[in-house]
Length: 291
Length: 159
Image 1 (tube, rainbow over the protein chains, first blue to last red):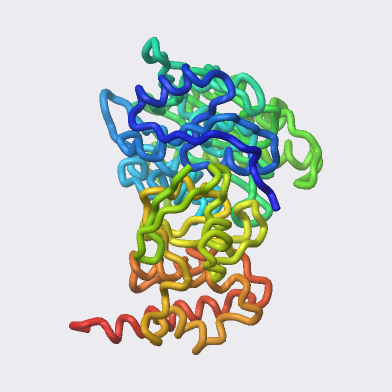
Image 2 (cartoon, rainbow over the protein chains, first blue to last red; image 1 turned 135 degrees about the vertical axis):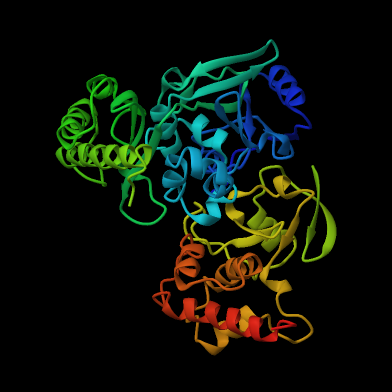
């Protein structure tokens, strides 16, 4: 039987209350929302917080809305909310692509966006999505809010820029003109972590790619940000040759390790192929050519 | 600490350790052993119960987190000797062999039909994709849920 180590439990009644509790209780306190990353870690005693602060009652943080040229997602939005959001389906279909293959439907009823990002697992899907989209993350502490770009949010495997007395509040995704996005993942079976996955966001200016973002999951010590491939895409007209070139870079610039999900050369090949497919779909969506 | 929640329509309060998982609260504290306890890692889905009407894996919810919420378990399905249509469907279509996954499957199916009374086979398979059955190959479970959907539709007023 897997049982977490003992801890004290408190329920936050507001964001201010949660932050005050974090500050008072010190570095051994952790926020818990859906619990579907933290509780498994606690059962394995890989995490042994002395205090849990449950933010499950802060349902004000479960929003998904468009505001100021951005889509804003509250940290407590559950995976199911993201999957079923009409706004995201229309504006940022990469989220539904990814959420369809995040864990399974029952887990998606509990797991949250904030929890997934703060787990900072190198194979986590929404982290690759947020990397591709150039998301900004709003972090709250007693001194107020600060905004951290996704590329700086994970400081290592299972480590984030969120300080001891801070909590993640919101994900902000900038909306660009003529934008298309897609997520491609290969997993061994339903609900498993990715063998490899690729998230792509493209925006167009006339016939050329104005902005490109690519994030890979499960093929590096953290979410892989493919800056060299992004540079190769910017300012170019979309073509199979261009996408093949970016896919080749994806295979070169990721850093997978061999494990039970496959050897390194296979994962590099897969990362490239999935990048290629996601580029194709993102471009088709932006140019409204998706069949 | 004390926790107060509604289980199968009855509000109750118990003294618990904060680290107690909901599955053990239901089985050991309340004696509701219809909810099964399997992999302990939120993979197998035998521990599924409904929390505010939606399926959750009770091995990955603290009993403390369920405080203030409504929990529904397999024990609530049969009412005064009448099986829930989902339970009846599992009987009619031989939706189980060993029965270990059955309570979780039935609770997920109940939640599915409450939201979507006419699911396609694909929607049924998607809904139960977080739960493992090692006996049936799933075919009869899908048939059982379809049986329940068809018979609920036939019994619904105005249909």
